[in-house]
Figure 1: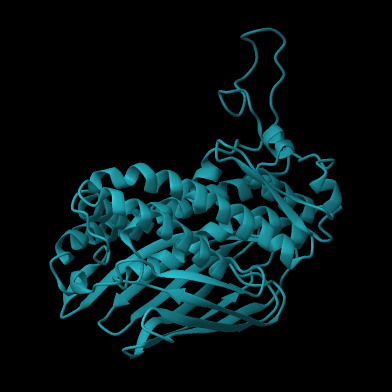
Figure 2 (figure 1 turned 30 degrees about the vertical axis):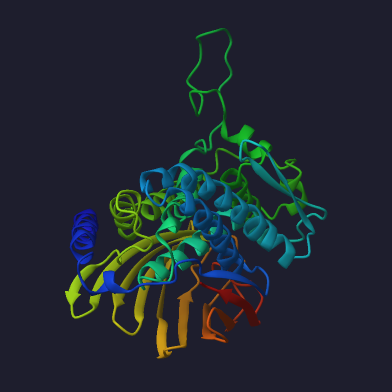
Length: 431
């Protein structure tokens, strides 16, 4: 039944996206160049860091568009590779690096010509919470950036169509990374060529090898087990801790992570946006996409999305529902949080890009969740988070963005794990 419902929603979004291009959402025009953003926020700074990365991608794509105006079908040739690079930068600098900076671990980075990258730290993680958040931080940051793009697509004129490949690659980071991580089981010994059972992967790699080589998902799952065993986080970081493949909870958390990754990849908004990207941007040269939503008439629309999160003692699947109106985007979501022992639930709601005047708009959102019982025992009780953002013009081409939020102690994607106030600010430009 669950699969039938999701398939129906997915089909409706695709069909609605094809029809809405001639509707009221398609008439919302944005600037010819931009918007560009430069700013920062309290660490882990994944959201505003992501906005800077989106702006970097937009700026280069805008420069490329000057050469391909009459040949829009050439745009994906540079927009897609650039999206790979930018999503990698977000993964490392505003993902692993952001959690490392939050915990004062002094991160540094390395990048290869093949778009490979890595993050190192100068200090060992002091707690298992820090280590788990550090391992999950890369995919977390890309997911946060993808959500910022998705909300922008719900208000045409807010994000250029060139951001669609970045949306796709950032959104699928968790799903692809998980899909290419081996099943956690010991690699069998081969007594002679051709003998023995097949290894976890046909190319001869195994979970333990990936863990030792720095695979995020393998480190994350091993950290979850090591937390339950009350091991030293430095031993996991140095790969001196060896995973116990006889632990049924290791297999269970692995399967839960795979389910989250699949749920994340099924996002109807993602695939509707890519359909519109090909049709309207690559084939017709349009700078902005119509909203990936089912039209309801008179400037209203409805769309749904899925996303996932891997967290220090649980994994979580989100189901988003957005109502598009001429003056704001309203969103609600529900999610489950699953540990190896228990399932809890969380909810959230927000009003995004509410028009306060022709020169200002605001966003407000909040989240509440219960914490599942878990042998990791990092968090208990319930959690909450509230935040808001205001953006207004300070001239014909420039604007100011201000953001503030408050949460209690505990994990929530993209915000500090400690309780207290977090703030951000930056400048925008559009021409």
